[in-house]
Amino acid sequence: MYAFSNAVNSMHSEDVKQLMKQASGKNLISFAGGMPNNHLFPVEQIDEIYNSLPETVKKLCFQYGPTSGYPPLVKSLEDYLENKGVVVGDNKILVTTGSLQAISIITQEFVNEGDIILTENPCFVGALTVFETFGAEIHSIPIDKHGIDIEALKSKIESLERKPKFLYVTPNYHNPAGIIYSPERKKELLEALSGTGIILLEDDAYSDLYFNEDEKHLTKAMKSFGVKDVEIIYTGSFSKILGPGFRLGFMLSSEEIFEKAETVKQALDACTSNFMQILGNEFLVQNKLEPYLKFLRSEYQERRDLLQKHLKTHMPKEITWNEPKGGFYVWLKLPPNISSTDIFNESVTKGVVFVTGRTFDPASKKDDRLRLSFSNMPKDQIEKGVIILSEAIKEVLQNSKVVLS
Ligand SMILES: Cc1ncc(COP(=O)(O)O)c(C=O)c1O
Image (cartoon, rainbow, N blue to C red; front, side):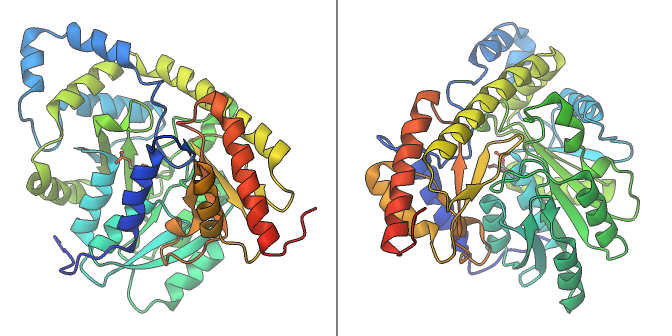
């Protein structure tokens, strides 16, 4: 517990710093940032909530609170999770400062330098940065359009001489791949982990952002599958819905894991901002979340549709991609031997940025993909962005002597 690599060394942390800069770069059309839309935040609702708080609660906003979380928010989160079909039961909730803090706490709790963590490939780069910073040895397993490759996972587990501390996955509207695990794949994953003693870290930052009500059931968390012999730690976040400025996340785990996590959190920041917890709690108890989510889903779906339409019109045939059913991301596939870093270098000079594929590879090598985020895109810039990007891609393909069809 409390491991920390002396030589803090994260290959991906520079990528993340770059990413944050590019995401907000002026005069650039940015498909880069995995952030919610600047113009969709619930500013009025939050104004209303704060202004109508009793004076005593306003004062509480400025105060420290319990490390585990503001008790009314913990209760509201229980209801929120039960509504999503996640039975809290004997599990405990720890409110965290964003779900990245939950990932970091769990890593500190379980991982000493040199310990093994399993991840998907590609993998959310923020989590990679955490795992690297704490000196973990990362082994990654490929995913396909239905989820993690089960055979590859099994043979990886068999081939390792030491037991991995946990497997980290983002099954719903994956960052960066945009996929959602099929129910079968979720079940197979739990079967594959059964009896191995490997903890499953289920990161569920995007499941509220499905575009089609009929597909809501597909977002069902593995934590709610009722499997007894796999220890699952579930993390959630309000960053992609209320806004990352809230820095409001949480983890749901067994009591034993919760208690150690609470101790780690105590040493990190004592408690998550009471201000944000109180505002977040009021948003939930005043039933403002569901109508707001409805609005967000249709806004993001509209951007997804526009991006799909313009990609179809302008991209050369050699480029393929998925159609995400929720979340923020489209994951473009390039022809063999074309690197997304080369395309990035061309595209940034023309004024469009995105995130290169290698950013999400734990080994920082695999570069045959690129991530387009449509979430923070003004609708009227999507086509222009796609045209510029497709020109950059065509140039790189031509220079690489790929015959364009
Ligand atoms: C898959 C995934 N998990 C977790 C997070 C972290 O979110 P938070 O702002 O709650 O720390 C992100 C943010 O990009 C994400 O994409």
